[in-house]
Image (tube, rainbow, N blue to C red; front, side):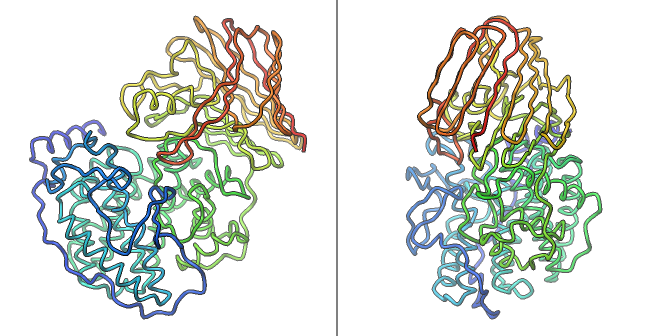
Length: 599
């Protein structure tokens, strides 16, 4: 059904016969927001978008008081040719401008929340700036023309930020007419293509359903009849997406921590909006799935930094930025979700989390959520093993949805807040073929690569074929002395990889059994950059750096063992050098990797 949805949509756009191609609209007139008449909040907001702005929630750019160029790449300055074309005539990857996400980024309107916060605190200049930027955006992006109308999800993120800005300024019940018309124009763009978004089985469906629910219920409350249909459509798909895309154990269809946060923040905003308008509650099943999704992400967060394993695709998406917390700090999102869906406090001692709740109008719950513990999420193939200050994440293949990375049996290892065995990330959606293969393939993960190939054949920019499935599982066994888990897959070449992990108070031991390959098998441990010392003989390898010691024993001799430079990308469009231990074998057997903590 998804293939039918997507094919029908693309063919209709190609021939210009889709209903969305016939949309027309007038440029809405400001002002969009008036002076705030409610008291300021007694907490700080974000300091960004005041001299410098952020792309992808991390990359700083200089900005002035005047609106930016909405139709150019803010890094290269390249301008999309003929930006006044109907959006559906603009290609996804125009070589003249490169990554279209760079054009879209400023039009997600993260700056809107920063300006609204300052206006709430009494800064009249920020209110003027907010209206001036919105007026300029509307003039330079007339309805349904140009790149910034091309993606329904991008339009949805603007609806989110317009609604939250109205909430910050106390103007939900009596918004300016220009704001109402701007929201209506966006919903008219989103609604006709919701079927395509649903066909993606990813965050496009959740985001666009949320925008229809939020914007539709808002317009309905303001007496606009078309809002009712949009609200009902949004509600239908919010319920459907939660039940289909979120597993019983809490994993999300995209197998990505950052997209998981985007989905969770989206549902948090939906629940906030439901409360704002006093709308009927959602189904018990939907709430159950969102609670499970909250628990899944919470289980792997490092409490001191808010960071998480760098698993899955990451395009820098982040909504609801109310403070200066780092892009990779996931605590504010979990604090909000825990308060909304569990009625529990998470990270109550964390200043940014407290600020986030205050701006969202959510009281800090009195009862704390339980500390994170070991967790098996078999519906998506994630095992989180925790013991004291050490954590292991084992990724095993249980694909119900399209995999975007060849990361079967990837292992992430954290000790005392240090991510010792690390995932490469995904870097860019517009990278060259070599970079795409590296970051998304086996070489970008702590696993075994067989016969110099990926674990699955690549058949598209975001898709692999011959999806792997786990053929054996050692159930999670947790006791006072530690926790253990194991899994195995057999690929289409009849190659077998079994990995078993045992985590204790000071030790992690990883056993890899390798069978069925033809030429070679390469084990990689991707490590933080540092002065690593390597010592080896035929069957034992020792690696030391600071207080870390890693020992690798094998039943078969290693034909190659070396430390090489590799890449990791922890944020979109950024990459750094790190150290990779590569050990190559040309015979089947068993490899045991042991880490001993000195603290």
